[in-house]
Image (cartoon, rainbow, N blue to C red; front, side, top):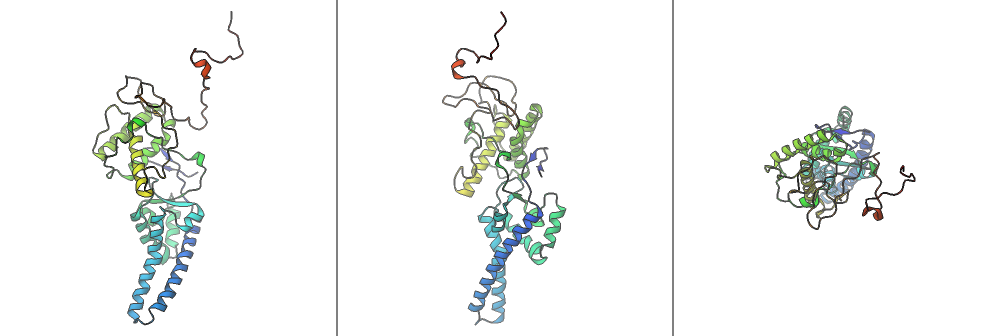
Length: 326
């Protein structure tokens, strides 16, 4: 399986699309665009028959730009990276950090695509995709995008854990415009892999990422908040803003994959062991808060058997069938 690797040596399980599937998607998009262009051209020829030659040429150029260039740009912008061909092939255009593309990304891809796809019959795009390790054409390189496979097994997709509830809404006024996509990518992939990292290495990585994030936002991380909780809360705030901008709601498109619980200690609690990513942390909880629940174990890890309720009050365990020695 192809994986992207960040500068922090954290694997990203976005699967770049291969050249055959991308070529098929482009062919389907071109068939639709050319069909629409022919229909529009026939209508324009009938409507501009009384104009002079210069006006007819100007109308032809305008129709070419609007249909064959502006059409794909508008479709990718409105569909958030899924044209008709990509939708049929199960592909999507995303940013380098895995987020949805915007108009500027689609504009750059469409403008460069005129040269490397239309004018060179896709030869330049094929060569660039074969040379690129991620299968990106020149439009993707200049736009900072990547075409990935969208139809992959759900159970193997990484998720970003939900932030602790006592940090909900705390970073609503934080300015995130200066944070680069590369840093978002590193933070997101750290959060999806923190259970698989060594506690010391994971803690050091979280501290370094939190310091970089605080330097970019211009606001230091709150005292008493673990670095992992700080990163999770800021990423959740960014996802909420992206969902509000894209879908018009605060949670659309970003469902919480795990039940909301206290995976991180609330501030102000008694001193305890150092924060370890992915490990349950004890300590008193705020009034009215749900009971602490750690993140679910990683793949291949067995959970410890729970004690039945009727034995919980007496510090007893179910019988194992062995009698203690007399």
